[in-house]
Each structure stands twice: as C-alpha cells, then as structure tokens.
Image 1: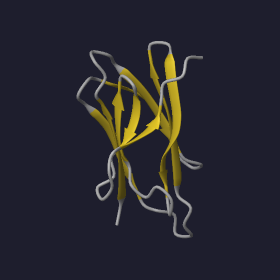
Image 2: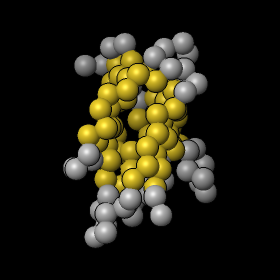
Image 3: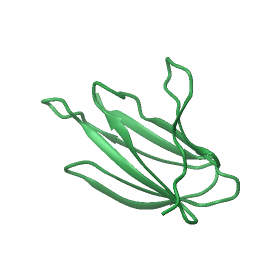
Image 4: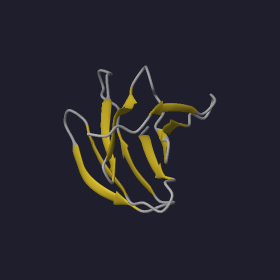
Length: 103
C-alpha cells in the first residue's frame, strides 16, 4: 500500500520552494503557489526505515525537516505558514514542527 506526503503552502501571498529527497530518490525543486500542495507517493522500504527529508525556502528564510520517517513520524501531512511548519497528523493535534531560520 503506497504512503503519501503532502506539503501545503498557507503562506500569505508567497511562493514556496520545496525540495525533497530520500537516500534513493531526489524529487527536485518545486514552486508551490499559495493554497496549493506538493505531494508524492512511495512504496515503503521492504526492510523498513523509509526516510524523506525536505528543504523549504521563501524569500531569505529556510526550514529543513524530516517529512516522513517510518516508525517515528509515519504520517506525512505538513502545512507551511508565515510563522513556521506545522504537522497535521490525522489522529493527534496539530503541532509546530519548525520555525523559519535566516541563513
């Protein structure tokens, strides 16, 4: 059964740049409009340990985070807001995962 990761841009009037990858797959960079999502599906590693990480950029701010890690953060729904990145698991409350950093 495939797993899905969704990253939704809820910034106020800003294009979000998203670049995600795993050990085996580089999904490339994507410009995500306000209100739109970047998403992908994948088959979990047969031996476990599937891991995807992402870098987000808007203007001169950055966030790097683990978007999916099997057995730890086995969900993949993220919302990007002006104050940071939020996780939105189906069975738990929304939480602030990371705040914006300036390089």
